[in-house]
Image (tube, rainbow over all chains, first blue to last red):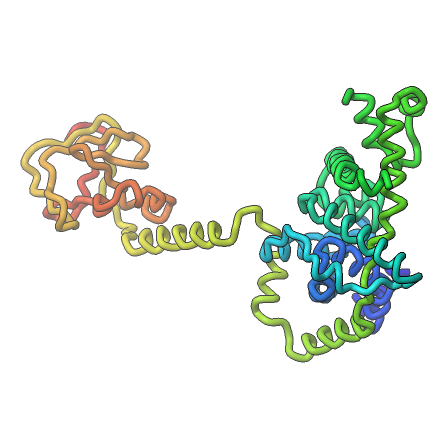
Length: 180
Length: 202
């Protein structure tokens, strides 16, 4: 369906692009949020990604990759550029504490969930961007290894190695949470 | 960790595993522990929830597209799209390299002369009291000239290298930082460069 909308856009039907944005925005914004851990930055980068993709629609080649893979390649590159610019390596605890949980089962449960959420965020944030992106794309984005290789421009062996390394590091950091 | 353990753990999550790896997990406690921990992580990952993003996100994107279509692409956006390849070198390094290249080409054209009269070949010498006039006021005319490099890419006169004029504009500008003040070629009193087309001594 997305490929059809892309063709319609190329033929001048700009409104079809809105369908593409609506379909892919949540997955895109979730990925960007988990990389930046900042909602505003995720939305800003997300807008730039979709704008850039629209400008370069004529460069998209269906034979080489799916549109979502191509789009996420743009997103990943823009995100890493932005992170380098802002040199974001530390987690923002303020963000963690002020974000509202989408489900609120009760005060005690919320506190436990918040602590767990904070630990997970800190653990993932402590990964280098190369490990973090692979982990987020696989575990949250649900991309296959081959798709992640296409998005990151790395061989599948490298992706597997980085993913394994990220998993090992997270297991070590989250060991106390896993035990409890 | 041995090779088979690494191979298994890196393949975790793939839809198909080889028989060898399937047999391995049945007996390897280290890999079994890895799998248990990974499953535990999978159970807690959803605890990290994403916020509610702007409900107008699509509208904002489409508004910007409409605005751009009205205004037309900015020059920067056009150039960015044309040269969208991501460079691995940092921007300041690229800017400095571009400046050095621009400077070299400018110097090259500033000293361009496309009327060389003579060319010296390897082993040729010119001796005698030739009244050679230096174009550059900082250099004195040599009384003896020996070319040590026969292919014409450089000439050495009394220990100083000169760039042949006929090679200006062919990449010899790259020698500018090395040659320094010895850029100006020497000329004789008739205005000829002290090069000769003859392969004999003159």
